[in-house]
Length: 224
Ligand code: DX5
Ligand code: ZN
Image 1 (tube, helix red, strand yellow):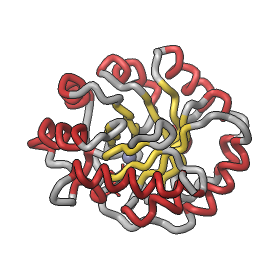
Image 2 (cartoon, helix red, strand yellow):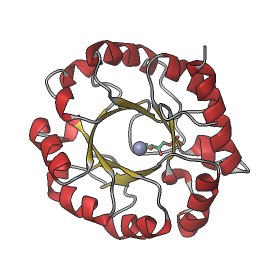
Image 3 (cartoon, helix red, strand yellow):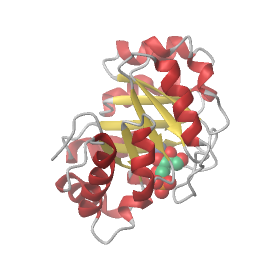
Image 4 (cartoon, helix red, strand yellow):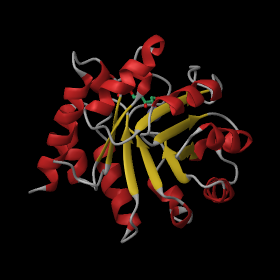
């Protein structure tokens, strides 16, 4: 059983980059709703990962929506190329945007969904005057740059704060970093709609089955 309201988004950062097609096929078979792709530039975050050619290659391998998490300095320079490469949603960091409102507008103009990400130390209040331009808010529950870090518990309070600020807006609220099976229920109860998980899914023996487990855990919160 699937719920359109909750999305499970495996983060390919934790997959074997030499066997991405296989990793994608596994989570797709498990019912993943979208793929989370971490783009890191070695400036905004200390790590370097996927760039345009790899996003294009992933696009050719799946019909799932690609959720591009741009952990890059000056994202404006790359919005159009990443939409052309196949991004369905582009999520920029508020900490990397000089003119966030304009950047979100541009993403929508390009035909993609506009996302904005908050580092753990950034309060949701910073988005109060930008929310109408966003389709999704991504709350980082680790400091961005690496997979496999521990979930930061203050994320729970932050989610409640964000939810209050959203009011009736139909916003996708995504949580990214250290999300394991046991976090699904409390996160959904506090307003998360999309659960991004890298190591939580790809370190399992059967990532497809893990996607199903994540969904069950998330749905247990919806149905109470
Ligand atoms: C971290 C990335 C995450 C990462 C999460 O900077 O943005 O998407 O893949 O990986 P886990 O789930 O292993 O923390
Ligand atoms: Zn990410």
